[in-house]
Length: 603
Image (cartoon, rainbow, N blue to C red; front, side, top):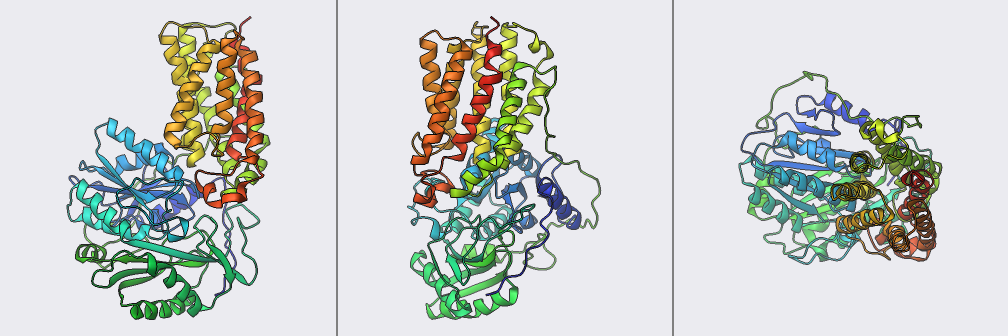
């Protein structure tokens, strides 16, 4: 199997904005941009009384996810940065644009960042009276053991979602289109996921927009069996296989894992990962088809093409969905999306050949610089941004050891937005020396809340959600202290707020201390801060001492083996390198100690 040269890629800073706008321009008859949001909604949506099927995930996987929006398929898709989840804010706005009053089904691949951000959006919708259900796609047999029926999904341990997304989204969309209620649509999606298995192979790595080198490489003359769509490691390396050998490897890794085969019908998807030629896929499918038939299976409406890609990765994956009568009917139902049509003349399509109105776009915050009017919270976040930005490349390298290498880029982008939000939210009066009123403390809390929401929205991914929660919950703690009659920001009130934030991060991310995450820096920080409060230390000295403990703990994560998130699948490969999240948190806490803590003590 051969591979072509990668394309131009584009400007990394504007890539998501550019391609979503281009998609909306090109396929205005089918989709429209959700205003001020990185998301698209079908021209057919919202439809009163119809369940809204909302999908989403990172850029770099087109046609997933925005290309699969249209009648008979998904109603809307929220889009994250390259290989990163969309933020909770983006998911919420997208779902709101699609909601027809019958509830929202969220369905997406099983990745930690997606789980957290979609989960936060679902909570917000529930608080507003919008009923939601969530179905995680877990089809990749190479990424974990077979699922246990009825057991909850653990994003760090259970199977990830890859090209099987297509089957789950299609059947759920068809069920919603025929008028099923929310529970019935969720049942169909769960059934489709339970009946779907995928196995893939990669021949060469992918190059991200703006990058000069591939994210990962595959040794010359070899291929990786079981590699994930973000470059996660596969089961093993092998010599480069020809089309017949590759077909054999794909089928043989799926057959033992298939659920009960019913009458033998299976939906088949041979999916290109971005750089594999169609002729090569057809050559491979010839042998896939024969091998399935030899196993007593009957391919049903097989599809060969690009459905869930990984930029310009060279490779293919094979997905099978075992069919019953209902799943076959739903998979066969009409649909019309930018990337896939089941039949001509699909139902419920508005003929819109041109975009009728320009729609504003969410834009990234500019690079912040200090101003004389900055309040203490803004100044602290500005200092944090500057120090973390100095180490952006280092953080990316640390993350690339056991992840996708985007932590430095993502957290710097998030802190940039956090500074802008804090600067807009913090009262100018907060800059007055010695201000310690209840209003001032409450303003600090509100400013941190605004900064946390902005960070999570801009950064995306698991780190964005966790950092956003950390800032927001710390702010909420300071606000509670102010309302309880403690206007003085003390070491004790800081320790209380940080403890609350720690608990929130544990609940949101599901991690524990010792699993090589940012908790391994946050936990010693909060413990030392509490001890300093008990000893009567002033805030500035207490914060500095606690930040030093966090720095030492972050360095010590090099001796830990990753146990959460995507890095957990790398096993011992993460050993010997400090955790990127713990390192960036220690940098942030150090910078805050230099800038923010002294201002807490007017003496």
